[in-house]
Structures are given as structure tokens and as C-alpha cells.
Image 1 (tube, rainbow, N blue to C red):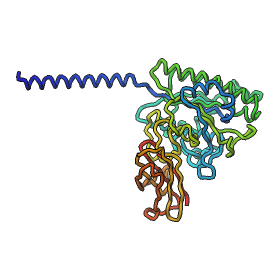
Image 2 (image 1 turned 180 degrees about the vertical axis):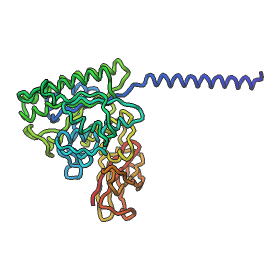
Image 3 (image 1 turned 30 degrees about the vertical axis):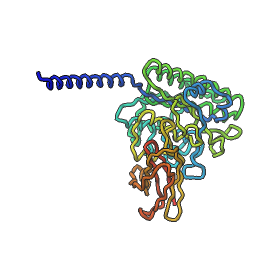
Image 4 (image 1 turned 90 degrees about the horizontal axis):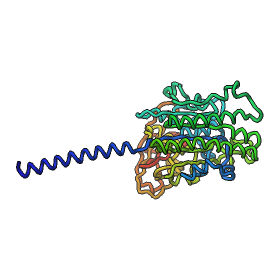
Length: 421
């Protein structure tokens, strides 16, 4: 055998060994990669100042791992996205990542949700990979109406694990003084959620707890409401323990988010308006890599959906993403706080930048067919540096309209805005 042949044989053997090594390393990496799971919990109607005064143990234990921050409900005051601070509306803000002008849930009864704006649960179910979902809820309408489980409009959405309907079971949960049967239901819901997390580990779960809102409606600010906030927090520990059990024993990484749907009026009895206390909500999470969105005055209900989608690496169709109103509070954020100023036949878009050199592409649509289940033609208007923080659109270069939608897009996040002229 010649020296050249020996050299070629050695090279081939080396390449085979290298290829096998890479295969082994890839397999080991796949084996070591943790499976991601999410559970979010809505504790109804607890104002942020109450949480911060009482310092509930479980909520702050979760935050000690990740973080705690105030946020807002109610959309942008005085604009098309202004949204009442009402329970089912708040749940829908979180579920869809949009405000009421899009999801169309306008109260707690006679609900006519616009299912064209997909919920988190539908996004999960539309992925190429199969994801298991779960809902543990003291209010059955969360599944049957807000999620639209089994409806043709939601592509016959299936929820894999369900614990709800107890408020309809008057035999086992008859009405009691101060509606404390709802507290008993909350306790059962938490038990069911904790057990399901520990045993089955659904990929995406929502737990809804009701009685804290009843306590405030009945007694307002005071020791009674405080007591049930702390009782609910102690029950929440069961879910947190289940999450920690899974992380310790099952090679899983969990995102837990605990929040509320709205704040309260000054006396604590009511909600629904746009006062600062009614709009003020809070978020506790165990995730460590929060970005500037989390601690800013821009954190809101609609940021929770994109955060969960980013954590789970969900693919979101572009036409759906361009309808969503929030920004992920994990990972990189390039731009934020988009505003629009129409003037004659121009619209000036202004945004804030975190100093990135990323390029920003501006898209525009002159219709809103998406709302009715149709599609809109998104026109690429311009690409500019993100730190330019401004662009003026000359509308005479396009089909003039009374209505415009904008999406301002970077590599790491996007912002949306409607303009009516």
C-alpha cells in the first residue's frame, strides 16, 4: 500500500470516528435536553398592593427563583384597545395575547368570543409536535366558552386533562354563607392540578381560582379578604411542590406564572373601571432570564402569551402573530412602546429601542379581514435601523384607507398598532 493510500485510509477512519462522535454527542445532548412545561395560575381579583403588603409565602417563593413585578390590565386608556377590568375579559387578554377589541369577550355573561384570535391552547394544539394540555378551573365557562373546546370555530379544540364543572354540582357543593362553597371548589381544583402535574405533567396547563374575588366583593379591603388571599396562597404551594418534584425527578424545565385578572376599586368591593388600582395587576414567575419588559411600566396581561410561546418554542403563524399585542418578557427584546401619529396623508410611527443595531422591518395592512376569519395583505413598507426609533409612512404611495394596521418587526420581537383616520 502506498503512503498516499495509507494517508487516505487514515483520513477516512478519522472522518468515520468524527462522524460517530458527533452522532453520540448529538444523542447525548438530546437525552440531556430538558422537556419544557408550562403552568399558569390566575388568582381572581387580588390587587397588587394587597400581595405586596401580605407577602404571601408561595407567590414570593416562586418569585425568589425568578421575579415579581407589577403589570397592567385594561388596555391603553382612551384608545381602541381600552378594555374593562372584568374577570372573563382578563382571562381572554391572557389567553389570546390581545385586548378586547380583538378577542371580543366583553363581560362574564352572554360571551361571544372571536375565535379567529387563537388562544394559547389552540396554538399548542396546532403545532407539528403533539402537546398535552390541561385546565383546572372553578368556572366551567373557561373551557367551554373562552377556550371554545370542541367547537368547530376552534378546529374542535381538545383539552386533554380537565378538572372543572364543580360549581354546577349543587349536590356536593351546595350554596353556603359567604359563598364559601367556591372556596371548597378552589381547594379541590388545586388538589386536582397538583396531582395531575405530578403524575401526568401536561405540557400546557391553566389553573383558575375564584374565591378571592368573591371575598373582596363581599367584604372589600379587610381581614376577611386578606385571610383568603393567604389561604389560597398556602393551597398554591401544592402546585409549586409538584412542579419542583417534576424538575428534580423527570428531567423537565417548568415555567410557572401566577397572576391576577384585574385589580380593585379603592374600597376593594368593585372593579371594571380604569382607575389605577383596578388596572394594576401583578406577575410572579420562576423564570430567571426575564428581560427589561418584565420590570417596565409596559408589562401587561398580553405579554404572557408571547412569553409562553417563546419558552415552549411554539411556532406562531405570521398573520396571527401580527394581531397579537404583547412582548415576551423572557429572551431578547429589541423594541417597545409603539405609537402612531396620523397627519394629513402620512402616519408617523414612533417606538423605543433597547439600543440594538438590529434592522426593523415595517409592514402595513389596509384592511381588517382577519377579524372576520379572512386574510389581510401585509405590505412591506420599509426597513430601517431599530435605533432610528421613527418612520413616516407616505400613504399616497399605497391604497388610501380609513383603517391601517402596522407591524414593526425585528429579529427578536415585534410591535403592532391600529390607526383609524
